[in-house]
Length: 179
Image 1 (cartoon, helix red, strand yellow):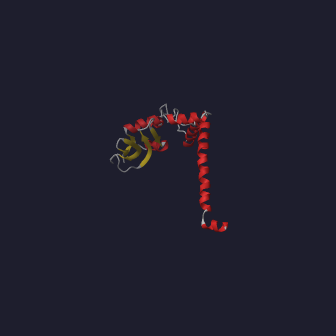
Image 2 (image 1 turned 60 degrees about the vertical axis):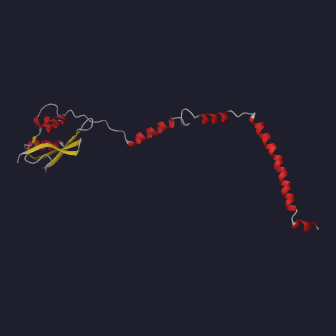
Image 3 (image 1 turned 90 degrees about the vertical axis):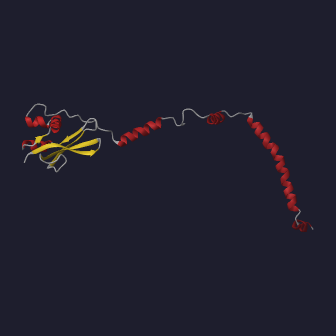
């Protein structure tokens, strides 16, 4: 049986990823495969290339022919050089920098939020500025006016209170008690 190592396209429109598979050369591109030996995701920077080197070398050793795209991928990983006995078996595969853990990023965000000013907006609205200024600088002149208003309103309240008591004393029960 003539076997080939080729790419099987997967994914959505405009976002492909590929499986590196060993399949019968007479089958369709996405048809039944014998074995999956890796994957290739070109949509990221750097591209993700994962190849099971032991299985790739086995299939190359038993006569499987790689497609041009797979041969280029095997050269990047260094598996083609191992198979042919050429120098450069370490390959030129670039690896993405490891992402920081989510908890580390969260703690950094919380720490930066703690360093921000706690008063809110950097510029206050006019009413807020006036209230803040009134609290910071209490004016002594406004206090006597407030006291004068309270004193002026007290005599009226005092006058009303005895009138209410007089009305209550004129009840028939109060007259009977007086006799």
